[in-house]
Length: 198
Length: 88
Image (cartoon, rainbow over all chains, first blue to last red; front, side):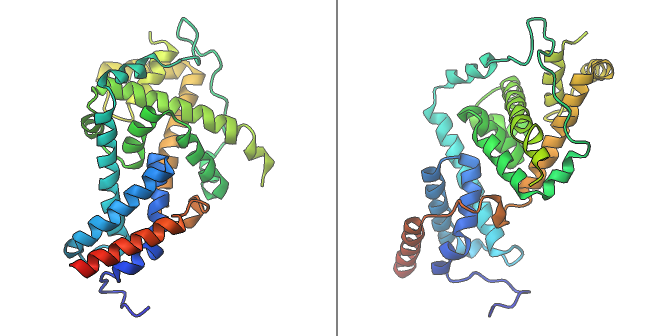
């Protein structure tokens, strides 16, 4: 490396795609779940970075700076998706199946016990693939709100603003997303894979 | 008395906002008597922790090593950046 570590400066923009393209692409793909959209967002982020290269401050690494720009592009994408959808679609949130409970609101099949210290799975690479797969399986609108709240760590108010929904819509939507993820992990990890010990 | 359906909704909500104290109280009461719902809460907290850990690993290649920017996209972006550089 010919760049001294203490005073990071931007590298040649022609090398950005090679150096950071895959990481940015994976980041975008995990959030928008559509390869073509993810590629477009990465391209937009690189071009925006180039136009604003004066705003780069040596406080952050080049990659952190690029990821921050990509994050903005992802939020813009969600805003656009919202505009293109009919606002009345939001009503679907509340009407999704709720088959975990019987008519009186009691568990039909309660949550199964997971491992004693489930956090130990964090060191298993395969777990992250399963988690990502479970997020990718969430239906579009649930996934979008969930991604902004849990992966981008937006506050509830911010997510409501991006999607133009009410707080109670958001809470129901996040609850549904978490329920689905819980079931998905139970089915694909805690129920089976964990015992296989690979 | 809350039903399990209501209690789980409120457990999830408590991850997004501070519940009013009456609500908090009724959830705590329900959880103290319901094994499934308290297990549910533990799993929700695990999920939150897992997602935070997941987010802190964005720069690690193992997350999804097969997902890579296609060579076409890569050279297209390089070309665009070069053009912009030459025109600026």
